[in-house]
Each structure stands twice: as C-alpha cells, then as structure tokens.
Length: 323
Image (cartoon, rainbow, N blue to C red; front, side, top):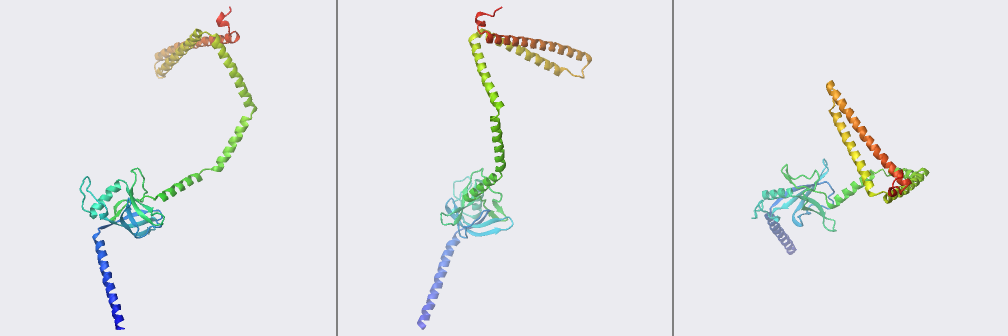
C-alpha cells in the first residue's frame, strides 16, 4: 500500500516537472519571437475564421488571429491579429542593407506597402471550410470600401481590407438583379405589342401599297429618261448647261451675302443721309438679286425646255432642233 502511494506521488512530481519544463521551453521560444498587434475591419461574414487562424502574406504565414469581435454601431467585424516581425525581411527605404527587425520599422514598412496597394482579404483554405486572412496587393486604381481605414487610429494600427472574391461576386450579382428588377417588362411588352400592331396596319394600308407602286413606276420612267439623255445629249452641251447654272448660283450667293452685309451695317439710329444711302444700296442690291434670279430662272427654263425636247424628240440633239 505504501509502495503504491510512493509510485503515485513520484508520478505526479515527475509530471509536474515535465509540464514546467515544456512550459519554460515553449515559453522561451515564444518569448524570443517579436510580435506586434494590428487590426483589420470586415463588413462581410467571417464564418469559418476562428481565433488562431493564420495570417498570410502571399502564402507566407506571418501571424495569427488573436480575437474577433462585432460592433453593433457600425455593423463591422473587428479582427485583431498578432504579427511576427521576424517573418518579414525589411530594408530601409531606398537602401540595400536589411535593417534590424523591430516594431517601429515594421509599422513603417506596412504603411509604405499600404500606399502601394497592400490590403487584407478573407480567403478559404481549400475545401476544409476554414478561412484565413491573406495580405496581398491590389491595383492602384482599385476602389476600397469606406470602412477600410489604415494607419494608426487611437494607438491601434489598422490594415485596410477589401471584400473576398465570393463576396465581390455576390455583390455584383445582387446589383445586376436589382438593375434587372427596375426594368418595366410589362410596359415594355405593351409598347412592343402596340408597335407591332401599328406596323402591321401601316404595311397593310392600301395607300402605302399604291404609293410604293407609283414610286416604282416613277423610278422606271426616270431611269429611261436619264438613259435617253445619256444617249442623245452631247457631253459638251451638258457641261455648258452645268457651268451656266453654277455661275448663276455663285452670282446669287454673292449678291445675297452682300445684301446681308449691307443690312447688318444699316442701323436705325443713324442720320437721315445714312438711311438714304442704305436705302439706295438696298435698292441696288434688290435689283441685283432680281437680275440674278431672272438669269437663274432663264437658265432653269432652258434646262426644262431641253429636257422636254429630249423626252419628246431624242434625235433633236443629233439632227438639231427644228425651227
């Protein structure tokens, strides 16, 4: 009986010594690691993220999740992290020599990298259902959510966050569905039906059919007339008529432009002599306009007469007009 008690006591003492030894050993290992605290805020669900989940920088474990809390005021989830300074090699800005790992240099490095697009994101760990926090870089033009604050606030260092890939896809789908829901499909269908009915009535209208038939007949006649003109009218005569018409139009434009200039120069507040001069100028311009219009009318009459002659007697331009 005494022997059993002695063995039990010895076992308890040895177990206590071993536990103390392990505690001291692992405590010393942990004590040798320099840790800093940082916070990241999320608005999406963090289901699967637990205390002790890893924090990674492009796949490299640099820390763990220390605490997860929810704020009722702004409906944000706060994740406190413990980061290992020695997991990241640091160099002074613009230098090539690695600097000593310390808390101040580590936060300076984080601030510089945040300026280059570093942010946090929740990511799934394969098919196990667990999640971790991953630090990575985004493009400079990427717009982060308003709650993604960074830097020191109330002596707490914040790292900005962005929605996870699944959350981003879900938000895009919701936005697309919301835009689709705003479309008045019923009204659009009714308008389409009315448009189809109106189009059917228009197509089946006898007046439209008759008009199209008349247009076809007129087109055929016009083609025949043009063909006769091309065959019977000499090229020199066509060029002569075209030149006369163009010259008449140019003279008319010049006269009208001169008339507009004189009208702009004429002012009601001028003296009587100026008014008389303007009136004389306007009279002269009117006469010029009339003369130009008369010439234009004469040219058009000649052209009409020519076309009529061609249509009635295509041989006239070969044999000469009969007197």
